[in-house]
Image 1 (cartoon, rainbow, N blue to C red):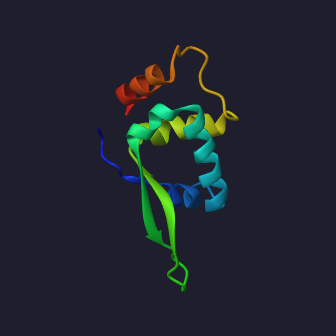
Image 2: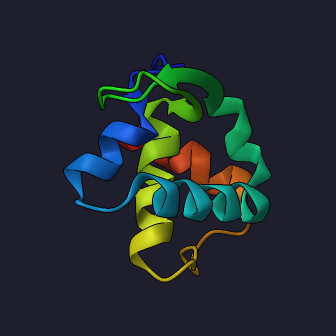
Length: 96
């Protein structure tokens, strides 16, 4: 395990996408690849605006982030060469 170092809200800022849209996409990703939940935790964070409202977001390790970004960039498709989503996660773990 590489540690939960990546916040979905920060990823949204980096790729210049609305946080709620990216969160909805990530929820769809988890439906397709439920094995990724082992690399993700739900957390509560304060919004950075002046209101300080709390909202739920995800914190994930590099494996989940890489798998999600691949899935997101390829229109919700996983690589054809992988026989299972668990195999894809193991492959990504070797690369990060």
